[in-house]
Length: 490
Image (cartoon, rainbow, N blue to C red):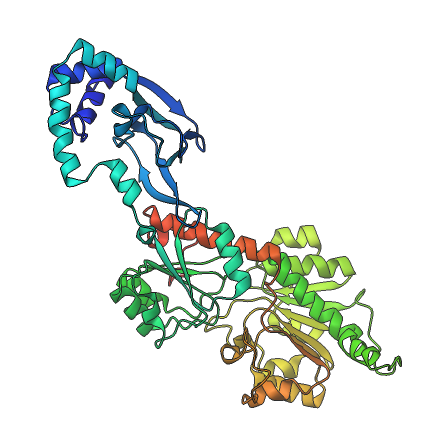
């Protein structure tokens, strides 16, 4: 099909020109011009004088408006064959929205002056235009009317559970597509799932409970995307999601440096006992008895898990001059060559290491990876660090190891029953979890409240990736098509 004929067929399908005969359409096509815009360029801006109509030949264009709160929101996406700016041909009023090329765009344009010239050449065009426009105006269906009347609540809606001020700030800053973000302090559970009513997606964190019943409720309400703002997905019943057609996406890597650096911060705190020294000095006690540490240089450190966080931890430990042993599902020769680490069996790692840092995901195979048998194989006085998932450690076995001195120090950023406590202020309540309460009594244990991810850099990366995951879904990707999809086969 020639470009002229293609354009003629497009015009025939538009509101304005659907009533014109072939000759009138030919006259208009002769007056129209081609133009192109690179990705990201503004075709026009809200408030500009409208003097032309656009007919998209190829590519996509975002229609962006400022809402009553001043937010710049996307109210429509135009693609091949779509027409916008028709009213500009009849009255040169200010543009009601920005048009921004989402990709490289090719289009035809017809200006106000060109239409005037066409009307002079072929006056009967006016009759066809009047007949068509009068019908559309009476029904209030012109594109301009839709843009002006479009309500903010028609935006893609996302229910964000277990929301905290620092995450809310990061997500608002990353919300470049103008999604309607609804923040809830409550965690997603069977009791709170109804808060997601009316939303197309939910955004959840590590302690939200997205079990099979919750997934079923979400699907019944029309929620078809679960956007995790974390790497782990053990709290989501993925098989039910797949059965019900609910897509799941995660943030596989937000800032491996943040978590690795926190793991090492726990090591150094426990080694040099800075937490105890700080408390003494604040009370006027400047003695050093009981604060003896050891040189990291020359010590043997074990890293369990060779993902991005594990690799960052290895790099830091090698910088200290440690000998680094690694256990993971597969050996990575490039790490051996680049860092000089040694891949060993789990038993070898447990038996040889002075420090053990856990960076493995929580799966049925890794649950209680550190149990009584594993602790029994460790060197006496070993330091154990966990910044991954609480379920990697059997807490009862850990307590026994601490009491006997087999474990000389423990740094925990996670805890297997943390969902009842972490991220919340319980300072005015009784700590009813006996194991957690006992852990807090050891002066050689440092517990932080799952804050390894908590850096400005990591928060920005989490928010950006979460919004990108939602955008992919909104644009049509589903299930395994999503870049950061979570599948039951993983």
